[in-house]
Image (cartoon, rainbow, N blue to C red; front, side, top):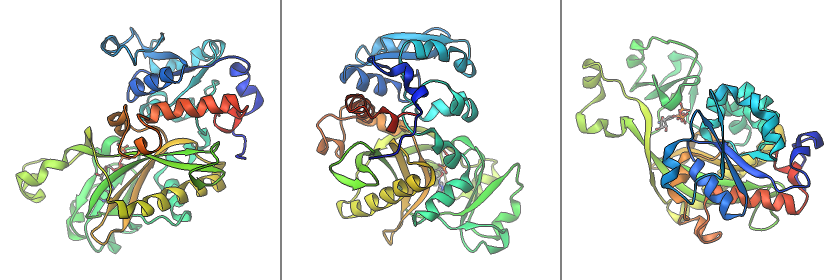
Length: 355
Ligand code: ATP
């Protein structure tokens, strides 16, 4: 059995009643509401100002009710109302970013997943320590510019969508680098990017066993990233820099991908290690997470980032993916979250999956 990550008092608002699932109206909310509805939950959309009109276009994903706040930062002020409605918050990739990590970690409402993960994922160095301890291959990191011996990517802390990242093809090219804040320098890995959507269930006792539960692969995508993805069509980067155009990695969409089947053992091994290590470090991740990495031509998978909540790439698979269809037909990550909560309720084990 997994460890409890929620106190009795945190769970009191959802005990002895049917909870409703709530999330912020953005990112992957359509999928989360659709999945919750399919599993028989009532749904609550948290929005800023008037409810977004586009939900009217998607009747199967429209939340049953909306709760409006003047700004996202004011969400903590409606915590008591959320508790009185028996809400469980399902955080998505934008939720923590908009609400702010501090406010999110203190939000006095039950949240799906382990909030303790925040301390390990929001700082690039701590995340690296987690992956290092797990024995997961990563792009080399350089402490000193003088050690650079190949192409590198310089990443700023908290750079959303890789804004302001600096690419240099060698040490000499780094001479032009003028830091504007704290950064890390990484080996620029040449290969193919894969964003793998996993789900760790601490409640499950069958399937691919990891930690106290089991690991599922629900989908995989690659991100369309403006403007880097199409840069090659315009010529060499140096020429563009002369023209004042810098590469960015701002995500503009997602495309579905599948991995060579012979590489799946590697994918599961990496994801399994990340989960096992999370259990040792902070009691374990729960639910969806995304392993983001680059497969080299030597077929080594180097992980540059993990996202520890539902990622927007899962929106491709609302009616199932080539992987999730082999777990259960038509299974989305949003629906899988709702199933996990339903099971936690039925088995009296919500303390293992909510925090
Ligand atoms: P987001 O918050 O949107 O996930 P981020 O600011 O955390 O972005 P990363 O996810 O680390 O940044 O990287 C953004 C993009 O940069 C990746 O999707 C990938 O295309 C590219 N990238 C990151 N690290 C490397 C690397 N070591 N080698 C090559 N490309 C990389």
